[in-house]
Image 1: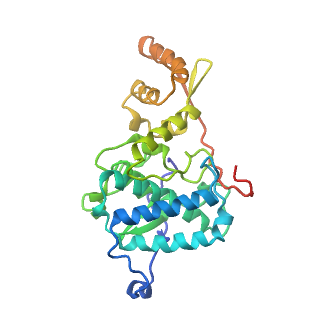
Image 2: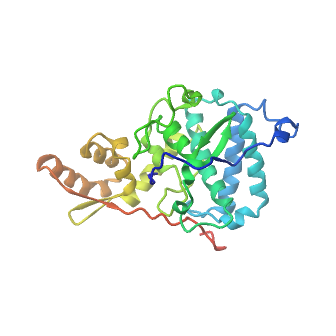
Image 3: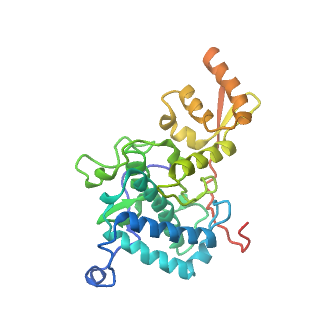
Length: 296
């Protein structure tokens, strides 16, 4: 997601920070758990979290209810175990699914820990730059996960520098091939974000394709002679193609024939005549809080 970029950041907030006493205690016996096994356990816990505290469409979270639940206590204990896992045991698909799940879980964790829920995650000072987990003794913020790991160490859209420098030890975990579909799996806590789902290595390909198709069907349309897109496609245009034509062709692959037909006509005009009107729908940054008992 694109937000105002500020290079100078406030203090990193590590939500699973161990105290010196906890680091030396036997209460945390996670050292021998393989990363793929931990990932499976995390997925099961997130499925429970989704079923009990997230709306059926995956877009809204009952933060207050979650904060008081036993499930949240279980999740926070599981998050502490992230300190000890070894990511080198994950395959590429396992790693991608793991970091998508961790991003969404960290977002929920960070917002649930707020003393007072904000009207928008934008109201929280540099939320995506400071909200972090310690994973395998390395610190990963939300921005580190999105831009460093999942976007293959590409700069934030309004930054120049890559998230990880040449000597950064986290470089070895960067995804080997960039997959633009990850944009439709990450939820940053706002109304306009894609739904929260739970991913694993077996469902990853189909689930990412479905998430992309669902988002495009909702957020891509022709109104009059204008092509109207989510602002996400404006912020990350280069992730979908080096030109407008390439980006539109990328989107077309994930639309139904009915939805794609009028866009193909506009694309024909763009290629032959040399220009069409593209409008970007403003992103709704209101917090995706569901403060009701009806989870429908």
